[in-house]
Amino acid sequence: MKKLEIKNLFKYYDKNCVVKDCSITVDDKKILTILGPSGSGKSTLISCIAGIELPQSGVITLNDSILFDNNLKINLSPEKRNIGFVFQNYALWPHLTIEKHLSFPLKAKKMGKNLIKEKCEIIISMLRLEDKIYKYPHQLSGGEQQRVALGRALIKEPDLLLLDEPLSNLDALLRERMQVEIRHIQKELGVTTILVTHDQEEAKKISDQVAVMNHGIIEQIGSFDSLVDNPQTPFIEEFIKR
Image 1 (tube, rainbow, N blue to C red):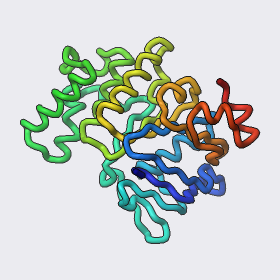
Image 2 (image 1 turned 90 degrees about the vertical axis):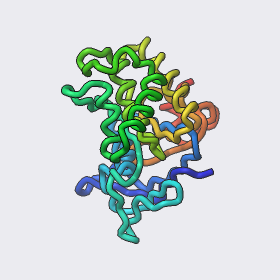
Image 3 (image 1 turned 30 degrees about the vertical axis):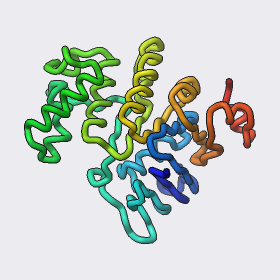
Image 4 (image 1 turned 135 degrees about the horizontal axis):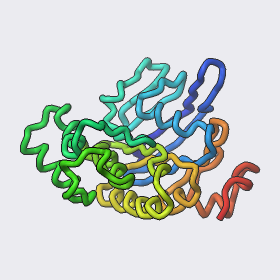
């Protein structure tokens, strides 16, 4: 079943086209990785999906609801899209404890205290942060900060989760561990996810499908193995390594 569908999306900065005629479908409860070199337009694309960036044309639908349609003059604000977003730098507030980070999205929805407590306890247990709930970000390791950012995005039960290079600041060993954790949590919750990365090993381990992006263009979409075995462009053949 289709969860997210993007059709003929274009995004310009002045005269520079950074997303060119992009069309992608992400199935329900799957992980799609957008893989490509720096400057290929990956982060801009998911920022358009989240409503942070405004495309010039195209259509974005989620659960058959239109998030953006230039012809119909529809552009839902980010807070109305029910999308969780984990940024590369985690974007944690230094003055808030982990408990307050996780409860913040629920308080913004004006949920009751008991329900907020229940949902926080579930996420905290899932992320194994029980002994960290009253800590501040500077008191956590990089992996713990990453889990808090992930928990904050997941606790509001988003229809779509966007991960923008979420592991790039971690060392190699922790990065591998978090790849496994992200995949496990995603499958446990069944949340449809788009991951942005330039790391091919990460794309191979985490993804159901991989979309390779180059100079704003989606060159090919498929399983990682299919990209290796059947590259459809010279760039894919050169870029993807087994």
